[in-house]
Image: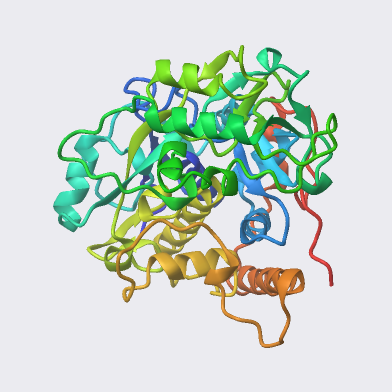
Length: 468
């Protein structure tokens, strides 16, 4: 197969941006289609590649979590997305969070400056011939979704995702709120708004009574458990929020010395520390009701909301029946799907799927056998989950240790997770070496993100190697 004909990558979100970069690094020309800003989605605000529309956190950087291991696996595979995230990080305790605008700008400039990437700022109305990666995400345009449906049938699934509000830091009353991270991990990276029992009960009642954004009569709400709107949680019981995003464990109000009954945490959303994201506060309340109800939270009485929460429909395919572990569509050998639309949940997971799809497209073009990551790795375990044909009632999934095979040795708790992380990274290294996947791209990536960063990331990334 010729390497002169460009590979079509549709969508320049995290998965599409990663896929385009990986192909270009391997000398394969890419035609990257992105309809924004000519045509916007319900959630995006800019035409930048990799724009983060929900949280600015890529979640934990610790090897005690599978997503922390997945980040390290991607670093070892030369991920542009993780390199840009490391370089644009903002304080977030043990998590990797980014200045969202700087992060997206870095990705955009890297691809704009890449000689092997042609950028097409038009909506893709059909699926191109030849090797193609579709990575249009959960907000795929109607025209492309219809083209895909004609190919796969009407097996499309859907759920609803809700975006959390962002508050201007200067509008938070720090005479009430206090800085701390749970159990002292991360110092004072989070702002915490404490509630006593009466304040919590009044807040829950207001959330339940508030006017909500109405769904269309033909739409059935199917929410992802990891991104549940606060009103849906409140509806499940009067204490559900207190055991969920408002849980006070690991926090003590320095003024009283006691643990609050409930707490709302805010996480820094930009490098300058001017914006704070309300952690876990996805909502489908109307805008006027959000302003009224959220200002009932102590410390947020005069909050200036830079972005209010919103609700949007996310679509994903029935991957266990439609997708191979190589991320090829069952119905067409040279068509690959990646990102959130294949049923992975999370920024890191989405980008990882774009990376894997690109590796296999490159191998297809060069006439080499396609590959699947070892199931002991975070990447391989997630792929195995979403493409398992025996799976029924498929729902989106994050990377987690529960997807990985059990260890041979009998260990529990933290030691078990660290042992799984060591095994995962050892197997990833073997897979990279055995399939000649290493690309000497460090200099290119460092240059690609340097224009918008203030520091150079450690080559190994934000987290230390797992203990031996």
